[in-house]
Length: 341
Image (cartoon, rainbow, N blue to C red; front, side):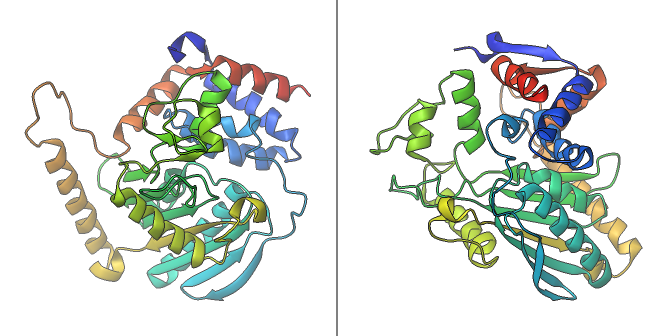
């Protein structure tokens, strides 16, 4: 089914307003809702399925055991945060803020989070916050059992995304890699189920290990690694260890325990280059590397070579410039109904 036939074009400003109203029905203040919408709309505008689908599918629901966020352990260059079953996105914002402050003071910082019950969303948004401050940002996220290891069909890993942002010189603030280690995102399955559309072939198994294009069957089964090989499985395992085992969150029965984990590493290039002049030199060197990639000899039929995140940046910029975005019709109707409750 062509999903474009089931979409509606809406104003970005109006969509923002509706999303804030809808989130408010879940018990968040306007200020909290605004912060959450910033992250989700950053994804939505790029066509990233870590966007506003979370609002209507329970991704932002408060946990009944929610308590206060606690710093379990802290040093000048590190911290381990117990999220107290608070919203994962809000806790990760706090972790990124701590990593930023510590890295500015010491040159490098590592902050982990655990005990959050839901997705932290579009990781590139967080790593970009670090790059805006001329830091290298690396953010990893572990989540419940949705993805099968290579040669298996039992879900063990989360979709376990990786985001890396590096500051560059010029008008662009950073070059950002944001990718799941899975072939499909969990909220991509939920989007497809909401829209009544199929998912691509060879991205998921049903509960008996058969390949499926039914998002409902995939939700009951397992997603595959992004390259359907040992390489994506190995990356997913490393994220599981660094954002999961290291953070102190659940590593077994992750769904029932509602304890997901994150890993935030912030690096100030000046710990290698020494001073602001060195930072500028590093940024120029990154720009040169990126320029060489974009100017590489192209294969027949290729108009442009894109850097990681570049295509999405252009899509988002166009949506903002025209104040318009295409939204899946069922999702938009669900949002509007939720917003007026």
